[in-house]
Length: 273
Image (cartoon, rainbow, N blue to C red; front, top):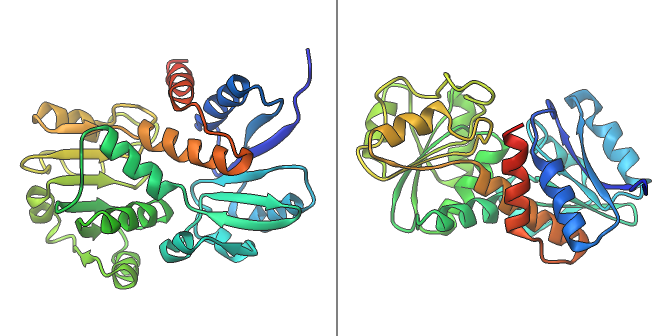
């Protein structure tokens, strides 16, 4: 059996939970591209060294996940206008040793919302979290014409993002009120990742109506989504964003339209193992 060369990978910490290898390798096989994708656990202190090695490698590029989306800004040679505006990148193109940063989180998130029947234009949206993923989500929501409110466990970090993006800061004291008044709640934190009993919100605190989106995809139905659906709200899981942002990254690396349905099925199959 032919040993395929690794041509793209994920830098994350931790990385073992990622569905990216399953969906990207399925897509590469479907497209007939003789290459493979792998996940690499890269702690923050090793990121600079990994980027240095990337320049001299045969990799097309990498994806970035927690906690690297903001730190990587200092390690690329340039980035797209949208990625610069967001202040975070999740995809890197290796162009003969020159590294170019992109953010496919924002369009990937928007594609997932629209796919689920949620058009955020004109909606009041409550976003939980202020990390790299939150930047892409908030930017996408603003571009779509939503009114965005943001809360984070660290108020200073939340205020920094709110000041930079012109978002509405929400304190711990006001969180419940803003959540209930929102038409779309989005969790961009890692709370609930790998723990189906954990939610970023206290029991009973949910929007009065509308949608709840959790970008965590393992488990596919987080406690937040389970509680939302039990309340009669429409839940949007994190798989859609993962698949769509991955498809955009694959197209950036290869120039080929990615098979979204193939990627989604591969990710679903991996989730069941």
